[in-house]
Length: 532
Image (cartoon, rainbow, N blue to C red):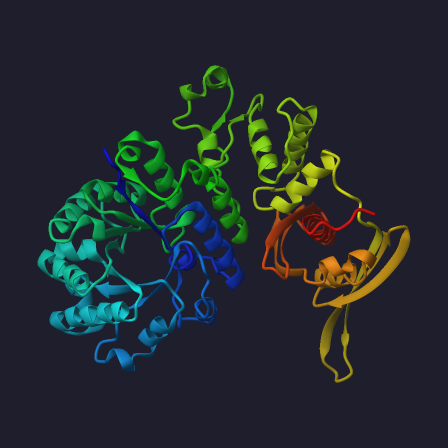
């Protein structure tokens, strides 16, 4: 029997940005959108053009993702025409494949929040969807507070949904905006809607305020909805949104769903899920949830007693899915025997072919574990992992050596009497036997070091002229002013390629310099710089 298609719609970059403490830069959004695209997500909703400078710039050009790049906004303002609504015009001007409009479907909200009649709200939904369709973009209608609205006034909630559908919306998305709906309610209400609107035009959008976001989403699919909206790692306001990091592997690895439905996430792409999850956490500069289903560090961890003994005989005794299916690894905490296959897969992905029984693989695994124990994190620093692997396998040229560096930070009054802080760095390096000393100034010690290090690398200078440091994140791993610090640096070259490197040290400048060195060496290797 042919499987039915399920559409996956990610709102991490818009809904997720409402998470307490989360603030995405433009570079953050592009990086995460790239991860989602690689994963096989159908729609990436990246923001609200016109609402803030970041999102306006984001939609200012065609981003050319495989996924449908989707802009979010409101239906037209009451009392205004489409042409006289600046917010709606910003939506229509966005470089987006699809536009998702949020419209009121709870009569209580129409009365209290909008202060208009129910018929006026229906007309606004209709005109707004028609305007998006007329612009040549795919239209989606997010039916805000639909489940609460349906429970209060089912006829009106359905009228709103049908108004959007009849106006040409590709998807009518039923939203549990307050997050209070339970699975049995979700299944019954979605089933009632698909009697009025074809299920392959119905989506679901659940929040997690009762910790049922994933369960409600699966209930909605069983009832006939064919699009699921959610966020990576369950980000979202209050308690978060339905967690796509849990929903996707459940759809693919649990037979009740895998045999009936299909998505664009292939088994090969599913194996990148853990990586995508942890890249997001690194971008947000927060520790991953080690107990997260499927992707958490403890999701396949076994500690002592009969569990470890049984897992060593057959992992199915205490694991519901193979960890490698989602890109995770098994951890036997008494005698850790997991990880070798993961190392081999990573080596293969960067073009290094090594026999399984090569003793250097075991040594590399040991070194990775030793480094992670003191604070390194290679999940989001692939460039540093590649350099480590190549060094241990003996195929990294020594392009240059740094003999020493010095950083001076001075706070003083400048010539016009303003109090300023000046950072100056000196780097002494050896390139092809010649000693080079460079001095650089910057906004801070790390920027000054970066400028000094890249000022003169002799024959390699042309390879790094287009190298740019675009992001810099610091995480304190232990308490106190003498804490161990991890620095994650994102670099970019003139072709738009990006990579991450990591450094760890009790000294933040030293950790930063280590990551800077990795970034430059990685660029030289990637671009085929000649060995000295």
